[in-house]
Image (cartoon, rainbow, N blue to C red; front, side, top):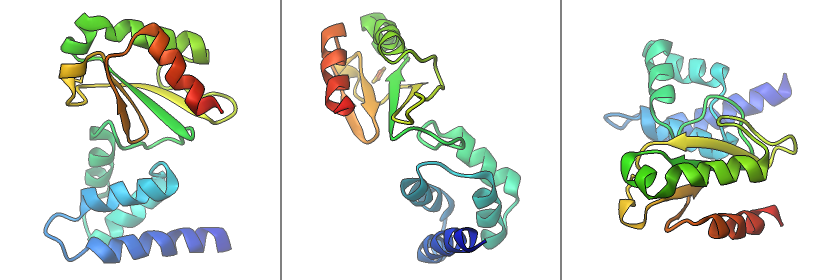
Length: 156
Ligand code: FES
């Protein structure tokens, strides 16, 4: 109960920080996710109540954006771009390498809670396709070898 109280307290502080803004929802969701790594359903309900908007709206926004997570994720979330420019330049191969290296399928998290593997649409860096993101860091010009090198950095 105490843990739950402190969770809501932290969410409340974030809500208070943005609630006067014209469209506070996305900023709140982003900051809550930064804090908890994902957006638990009960927290989404709390935010809806506080902003006085339907919880279906909050949930709809939380599930619309690929950078928002509604399920628990690993310490490092890998997002592989699957849009056409990346796809034609080997995006799919990047995904296959990651699946093999991490022994994961799309949407899964390693047992040690370290990596979650996801696919996403354009990351906005098509000039360096194929690309992926690991948390906030974008990596481009990916080859099989480079993917392995990058993974090694995060495995340490
Ligand atoms: S298509 Fe992959 S970054 Fe744009």
